[in-house]
Image (cartoon, rainbow, N blue to C red; front, side, top):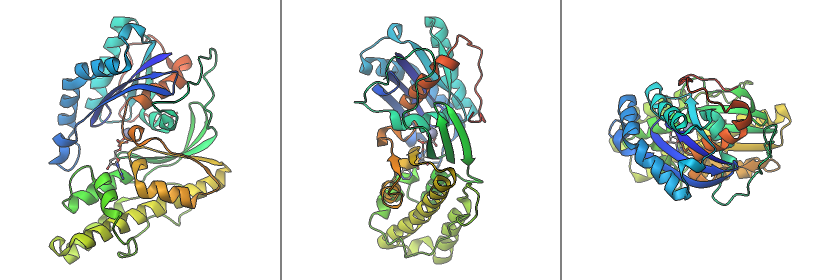
Length: 346
Ligand code: KG4
Ligand code: ZN
């Protein structure tokens, strides 16, 4: 089964063709990073317009790379939400028009379900099989998923294919958002995650004493705005100009250590509370080298699934994959569905 995935919920336009839910035959992504860099964050109106401009060429790039045509595609999976309203609309309306014009089933996908699914996607993966009837089982389930991105920090109990229980979410900023805001206040650029990650490699994580918000509270929610504010206060008090190269590296490492401590301590507690033995980390921040290394070290004894970096940040292969799970229950020819900026994970 060949599924075309379409993703446009934030600042990446993406199309991908995925075979039988696992093998990415293509993964075309047009990033708008340069457009938003000078603003230090995503500007929704600019993002919607940029999506519109690259839809058609990117669709063809994805089909060409996969060596296929729209005729051979079995269904179209598209991100319905959550995300920026204007951005979601562009991708969803395009997918609806494509599906209607070519008579294909349309599968609405939750963006976070896509991230959760990304651990199953690869260029060289074995197919899950063509099964009919009920959805294919998720071979990792049941497991705990930590989804960490620019828009989300969530702990999710994945009970089975497409069966999610959200245990915790961020109470304010998402962890990727905190990375981006800290990088912005340090004048480093956008997106901040990869820049701080690289800087942190040569830094001392114990140099600056930063808070670990809500670490010791028994719930599974996160909070990162206080940590970001602590960095802002530190920079304000000392003066940004007084930070040399090593100071910046130490600050990046100290900030990263605080993020990792909170993320992994909460995850470990959720693993214990649920009795789950398998753990996946997904979303853009799952690219983080410090987080990946610390998870391997601190959660020894837990089976750890990490997506390949190509499938961590927003992409359409994960949407096509999650669409494969939902194909038998959600695919239809209802071309009247709407974008849902606040769609909840069901
Ligand atoms: O999943 P994603 O592409 O978009 C959302 O759904 O939000 O995640 C983007 C986020 C950005 O905040 C970016 O700074 C962060 O992921 N990110 C990283 C790294 N690479 C990307 N954060 C920390 N370390 C990284 N290496
Ligand atoms: Zn995302």
